[in-house]
Length: 261
Image (cartoon, rainbow, N blue to C red):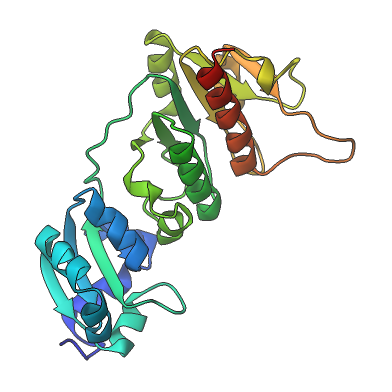
């Protein structure tokens, strides 16, 4: 059992709280029973898995499955577990995995999201969760957004992070152009658009552009859209949260596709 906060592995995992260190070590954190369950359910490769002896006793089957997928497994003291976790009250298990080990590729089919300069990890995680629930084919994220594997993103996704095809685009404009070559219509939301979002034919393969929480979409991406839509708001309401915007459009797309309107 690891009990010292000065242990080399413990110090290495603690550093993963920082984005800079996650990039440097090429690792990210998977925290808590639910996220580990989701990772195990899709056989996501793990690097290290650490848990307390109490957690191990209560979750022996999950522990064995996690050990099978990991290169190293350790039991740790409560103090060590609290130190390596980013949450205030960790539930007993923390794992690490290599960045970029995702095997699901983003296809240009059905409905796909393209997110530009999203900064809030809670927003991104909620969008991922909603996209998975709505049956979206995948999600593209611009390189200047919050890290796709930020611990708060994984938690906000409620485990759906492991089930949705996602990728970081080094150049979102090129990705949008590629989607158009593949026959997708590109849809952008603008407050002054003529069409409302339910007037779009979502039965067509569609790439939905969503922009930064404060600034919205860049003019470059807006100009590339084949269709511009608005979400009607009451007077005095400036905008909706980006995750809410995503949910409205994704479920309208699902409604149309299910009922073939």
